[in-house]
Image 1 (spheres, rainbow, N blue to C red):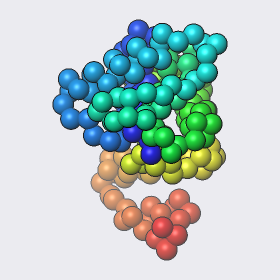
Image 2: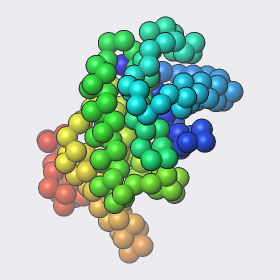
Image 3: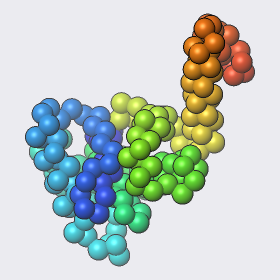
Length: 178
């Protein structure tokens, strides 16, 4: 199970943090982020992208699997049952989805479009479990969501509203497909 996903820049500033196993209290959350950053940032880029150890808030046998892209560290904290290569591939899928959504994603995209970044992540991982790894399906779901959002804004400004069924029909889906 994925315990948490942390994206930090080279200075240790968190750009996205999502805990799937609760870490109660802001001070403890900051402590986890600091500890994770210290562990991955001190390693040379020539070392492997796996760290095993313990993070007290999540227990023993926690693996930190990460990738360092330009100014960002993408870190997934997982339990011992998760495949190291599978998580590395998942990080790659997440980064590719961000790249296609933002056309060469950068740190500023994560800051100014955090809602869209969370939507993409929620299409891939929910509750610590991997939902989808097909990049085309992920991007299609995000595009459908954006289209629905634009349509609802358009309808709201025009003073009308569509039902869920009407919007689903416009998108080519029906309730029975859910």
